[in-house]
Amino acid sequence: MSKVTVVGAGNVGATCANVLAFNEVADEVVMLDVKEGVSEGKAMDMMQTAQLLGFDTTVVGCTNDYAQTANSDVVVITSGIPRKPGMTREELIGVNAGIVKSVAENILKYSPNAILVVISNPMDTMTYLSLKALGLPKNRIIGMGGALDSSRFKYFLSQALGCNANEVEGMVIGGHGDTTMIPLTRFATYKGMPVTNFISEEKLNEVAAATMVGGATLTKLLGTSAWYAPGAAGAFVVESILHDQKKMIPCSVYLEGEYGESDICIGVPVILGKNGIEKIVELDLNADEKAKFAASAKAVHGTNAALKEVGAL
Ligand SMILES: NC(=O)C1=CN([C@@H]2O[C@H](COP(=O)(O)OP(=O)(O)OC[C@H]3O[C@@H](n4cnc5c(N)ncnc54)[C@H](O)[C@@H]3O)[C@@H](O)[C@H]2O)C=CC1
Ligand SMILES: O=C([O-])CC(=O)C(=O)O
Image 1 (cartoon, rainbow, N blue to C red):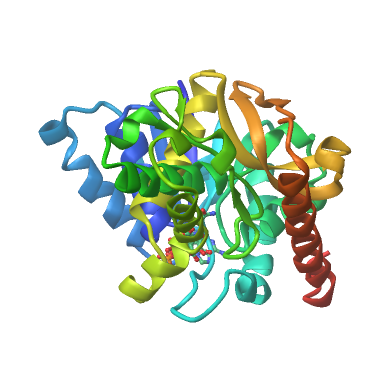
Image 2 (image 1 turned 180 degrees about the vertical axis):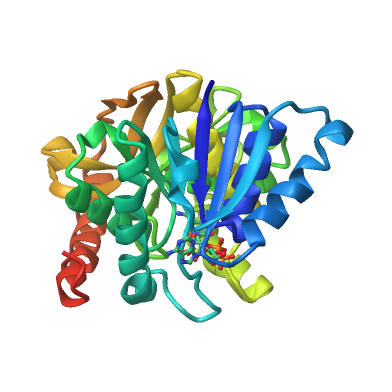
């Protein structure tokens, strides 16, 4: 029996739960929210699609009842507020730090062996906070951002190339912020060939820029931040863990010297399997990429420092 809990049954959490159920990633998916009846209602709505879509996963909803989350294998944390147009993700720290910390502590009481996937923003800092507050081994705390940013990168690349996004490879590392993301254009390929064989350097820079502000662009269009790709990216990360797929996915993980950084959670490629982070993959970055990574880490360190100011650490 595999069990996944999704905390926060809002836009991202409910979408994530829906993808987990539709793809039968787990036997049971529990959604928990503080809003009375919302998780229960969304779970019932999803269960009423089971025979239409043909899945066997059981989806359960509950209002702040952590006993129902007991013995989860993986827990996805999406609780907290999303940004509005014109805001940065970092501005959410004051509200979200308290929510994420209390949720993570409650989860651990009932699922002491769970692997945590943190989605709430500012995600790298919320991942760092969860790690510091819970004191769990670093392989069990994973921030989701790079899976989404890389999917957006591949989307924008496919638009520029005029091709199928499934035939494009690319990764985004660094912080999950409008100015801290690093789309690795040098490593991007179309059917194994460098994308620079097909598009100009200028076009590639436009793709990278669009990727970095991908979340902000959608927030402006929607009035709140995105959820379809974020929810699906959360489920993608959960699936690699729960099914021991050992996929290489950029995730926000605790570094102890890798990429020249320490005491930080930031996006780097990792192998995700049944133990959570099974390996951190060290890419051979060039001088420009190294400088961008160092600048990104400096910014994330700055946001982490605010955890003390808001009394979360
Ligand atoms: N890391 C990433 O790539 C992404 C992160 N996000 C972040 O995910 C978070 C959620 O976004 P949305 O789902 O769009 O927001 P939303 O407002 O639709 O849903 C958030 C849910 O959290 C619930 N919640 C608040 N406090 C809670 C608590 N203590 N316990 C349980 N539930 C609680 C709310 O009642 C609400 O239903 C935001 O912080 C957003 O910035 C969103 C997209 C991508
Ligand atoms: O843009 C936001 O605030 C939500 C998010 O992290 C994303 O969609 O990448």
